[in-house]
Image 1: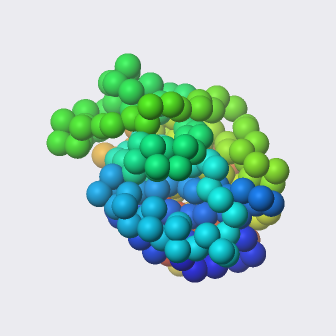
Image 2: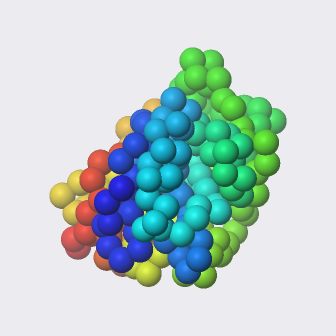
Image 3: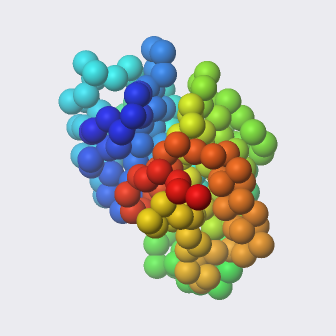
Amino acid sequence: MRELTENVYALDKTAGAHGYLVAGSGRSVLIDPGLASGAKAVLAELAGAHRRIPRVTDVVLTHYDPDHSGAAPALQEALGVTVWMGRADAAILRGEVEPPTRARRLLKKVNPMHPPAELREIDGETSIIPGLSALPAPGHTPGHLILTWHGVVFCGDAVRIQDGRLVQFPAFLISDKDAALATAELIASLRPRLVCPGHGKPDRLRA
Ligand SMILES: [Zn+2]
């Protein structure tokens, strides 16, 4: 894994989407472990970095899509981590609520979902470890979260960043357009010094 800025790392081995690690004092938090097929490689990467980073105690899923959440069950089994996610997305991941759009219901048929045995649900701004907060950021999915850490925003698939500007995902991947626009405004209002997206390169936000 490589350090992007102090105590923030990009994982090399997550499959499907980018995973990030925040090293707090005495414990680390992994954001979006990626597809289930990449879980073994992610565990090996974490084991290889154990001298540099504190033990991973928590995994935060920005949303339920399998390219972000799929490896969470394997990580929970192997490491005993607490897995956090937005309440509305937890209900979808557990199969209690159908995905909100036709495209998303089709995606679910192609990619059956496997929730971790235990989920800690988030329904408002929540501190994960001192300095790292999760904020509801609906739009891409109803229970999408973003995370903030000393001016760094981990935005999952709430937005993409292109040439220093926040860009929306294609409409068919968005469950609520108005909410997605409000979430982009929220992210811009945080004036991040670095935006770490689920897809594409981390970048500075230019006005
Ligand atoms: Zn997604």
